[in-house]
Amino acid sequence: MKISIQKNILEKILINSQSFTEKRDLTQITSHVLIQAKDGTLTIKATDYEIGLQTVITNNENTEEGEVTANSKKIADIVKNLRDEIINLYTEEQLLVIQQGNAEFKIPTFIAEEFPKFPLTKTSEQVQLSNIALSEQIKMSLPAADNNNPKHELNAILLDLRNTEYLVVSTDTKRLSLIICKEQSGITQKAIISKKSALEIQKILNNESKIFINKTNLIIENTNTTFFTKLMSGEYPRYEAIIPNELKYKIELPKQEILDNLHMIASLSNIVTISIHSNGIQLTTGQDAQSQAKIDLEINTNIASFLLHANIKYFIDFLNVTKSNTFFMELEEENTPFILISENHKTVIMPVII
Image 1 (tube, rainbow, N blue to C red):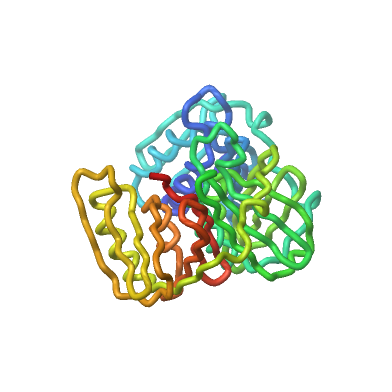
Image 2: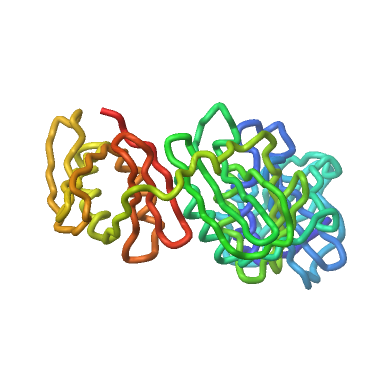
């Protein structure tokens, strides 16, 4: 195999591939990228088995067919430090040679035929969704997904596809984020997507993307790239049972004013105490805070008296992804779950019991 390629093109591909390779065990072939040259096309693949990225460059005439693997980090570090000129890659016995001018680097390779195969779209169904909207909805859902829960499906988001709508759900058991979209997907399937994969998906989706799904994989095809993620096994919580019906009180609140004041309270405490009365809301630090803060807001609520203790982070996470200027808070009884709502996004939050 022999390839000549512009440095900045190769460097960008290798940088994008870093998130998809094994970092801890360098004896695994998944710590390598696969470089393939065939019919004037250069293909570079990276995968850690859970997620994968393939990038294709066409009309690359200066190639001799073949394939080789190379440690992802080593080749990226070498290319990064070369000049912004043509780089030559070629194989020499069991080595990959990276050459530019009088500089030459040789790094070991693995058996290219053993590199993991990528799933094929022809065994999957295409999902017809608004890609930009879905990307934004995944971004909005990510804060509520857990990080290190022993129940692995909670370290994920759920894409619940139905014929006439789809839902994007995430929960860490203390809050539940739910987005309902009245858009026909044409497919009925529940897909559990790891948080790691969801982070990549919301960056990859664009207007040209085609989304495919089967029982084990979700695949996204862009103009020159193909992304896949394995879907997580397990049973996602029955989230419908967690969502309260319409609650007793509903108040509309100014997003930016609430967000700014919560940030001030958060500088002293992780918990905010919200005291609601008919013509105002008072925000104070939690009882366990050594320092105290009190902020009074003139907001008409039509609620005679209501006291609520909540994790400030849950409020801020919701408001940070809310685009509208106002949002709603629904309440039932003190010390029971409450709901934050903005357009088609709602988050159910467990209060802090003090």
